[in-house]
Amino acid sequence: MPGPVLVCAATTRLAVAAHTAALTAGLLPAGPSWRTVLLAAEEPGPGIAARFGTVLRWDDEFGPLRPDGWTPRVGDLPVLERLLTDRWSLTGPLHLVVDGIAGLRSLAPILSRARITVCVSDLASYGPTPVRLPVGVGSRITSLLHLDLLPGASPVLLHEYDRQPVPIPLAALPALLGVPADPPHGVLLLGESLTRRAALPQAVEDRLTATALRAALRARPATPDPDPPPGDGDLVRGPRRRGHGPRVWFAGETVPRGLVREARRLGVPVHVVADPWSVRPALVVGHAGPELAAYAALARAGALPGTAVAALGAGALAGGAERVAAVLVDRTVPRLTGGGRIVAPPPAADLQESLRALAYTLRPGHLPELREDALRHLAGPSAPRSRFPAAGLAALDLPVPSAGTRLRRVLSPGGRPRHGRPVADQPGP
Image (cartoon, rainbow, N blue to C red; front, top):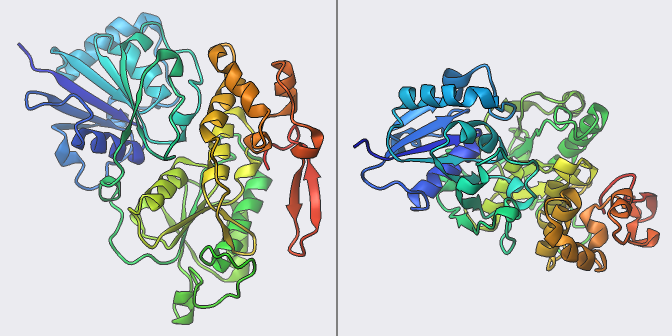
């Protein structure tokens, strides 16, 4: 009888590392008799391929279809299943590991015999299930694994299927991602393609990245002094004093025009890297993407000594798909001000309640049992920090925080308010 097969399908390098860490930690069903197959949409990190019996590339198997935008037609499923069963030799017992909703909508319906583990490597695990799953997929999900990006907070994804989430150990992640062992230096700006994801207009993303560059070059470690003088504590100025200039990396598909202009104006070369994990910066700056969340979690866990992480501009993200990530980054990741200060976020004691309330407002029809959590959270003091649009709350017959608490005040360096907007116009504190 053919032996059992474990198929791990991962769409990003971070997801590949998370799957491998889960496999190494014994969280996936892969005993000595199991054959392991890795299906990766991006190049795996060094040493990962050796941990799988077979490594397949998504483009070779399914190109030009992309894993995040393809759902096979129902009539094609039997043909596709026979094709993959023969091509990948999947005649024995089968277990499929996917890294999120994309895999549940593409591969899971095709491999109809497979039991399913969902292994999430980004902040999507803390938001609600964004779409209805294909028929028969939800009942085959046996477990939910996730990177413990927010200690003390439990994922809400797949809440309606009553699967208990299990955290994946973070200790092995830097080695699996190929993070260099060099002493940390310079700054890494994470380009998260906010315009391409329709999260921000191009002009706003240009302005944010230019501000990020200026702030990063002034950055200094977090300190209780509200206005510490620049000096030996600066994170990225050390190399400049030694005559080498600050080292600045940008990780992203497209370098924003605003960053190019600002770097030229400041006379600072920006080095583009395809993989954000291929360098060892002293400071990582981003908005609300998965790499920023993973860097922050690793820094909190002490897995990246000497690396500071800060967010800039997360409050500008307003779309439903981005709102959960923006709230979590704002409430848990230190903030980099325009003047270069790294400000720790206030304690987030009610973070779990906030996650459940956000999940209800985004998917009220699928999560009616979370309405009481939403009512309780909206009556609390941190509701304005959770980016609930007033019009959306009114449509759900939920209380709207008073106008006085919903104003966002942005302070000038002199301490006087420059402007304020209600949450309905621009979510965020």
